[in-house]
Image (cartoon, rainbow over all chains, first blue to last red; front, side, top):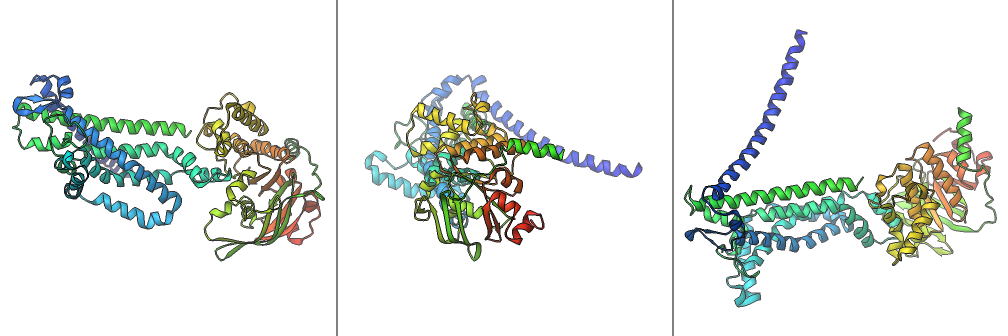
Length: 299
Length: 272
């Protein structure tokens, strides 16, 4: 019996260490949410700003104590949705080609190539966007584009940035479709594109949607590159895609250097952070719901 | 016990009587057919007639080429890289290698070793093939669903849940769904690649009975590891060994009086 004791102690130590890791992660997450919520809610409960007005107000002018976050909310959603719209067809199209048409080429050439895109720091995308996309906007739309900075420029830069994420995940999604589905479809006299369209895409749909949402999450949270090309105008609502605008993330980073700790402006910036946090929770929730539905559909 | 099993297998599998194959026109004619995977010759000089509206079984040890030949009939072998063929295979008097592979597969249906219903409803599974060939009215679609599922002896079990996922069915039901799905394009030939090897004995019995019924107005070709299955369902049996066709003939004759020593050795279990 005495000999067994050390073994038991070892078990307890193992349990202690792994349990501590879990506790630490949990504490960090809870502390983070608590901290952001506490600071972000101060705006409404202590500084007396109406939360409805904060979310729907169309002007963000800190000098006049006017805090309407709608321009940034609209900016964030506009660049996120637009960039996804641009990136999605290209991502799924190339994933189909790589998985269904030329698997060898996909593994050897295309995937390393696309992974390279993931590793490029976002400031590089920002600089490229500033010099290439913005001037492209000017030469295409002329006067209407102003400096070239605006929602459209931001969306294009973001589209390039999220393209590798969506493409890589879409490739994984299509690869995961069992080959026997393809065989079954071919054996019924269907062509390759009928098979891809009606069986492969259909059964990969939940995973493809997860890929899209993860891409959107990345677009929503991206700060630096967008900030460099979107123009950084949060004072009022953008009236078109060529208008300079701002996003929640861009306004938050830009504002922090000007805000005195403890001021209303400072708390209002925290409130922007709270909106960002809430949105990422929503994205994660959607991914979980899709995953659950996918598991149910596949029996 | 032994006795019981035999009788139940017989009764499930229908009669022991095999139909004549002499004088029956051929559905598929294979002449001097060779097939290579790269440098490896998987089929050597095969010449064989598949009788129309009869059941033919391909037997032989693993790797003998029986599945390869079956998959050549609907050109599924096209998907294997580095495959090369020579000789002719005629279906309805036409060289299948000159035909459009997709058109060929509409007439030559296939059922796989592992049931592979699509992740969609039972109805969508059945209508998958017909829908790809053209528009269907609601009544045409309903007619196809009921007719094929009835033919595959599955209608009574699923008629109230046609909109449920095909993946929710049991293995044996899934395989019968796959048979119904293959029937939906109205093929004249049905290829079955070890269709019961993933099924339990009761489901196996049902599928065997189906094979016999279907062979009354379809040409059925079945690859099987199970020699009893060949004796139960097939009118004609062909024995393959190392890519060669050793012997082919009426099932009863081949099993009771094999002409080749190799066939006899295999049938008596000297090797497998």
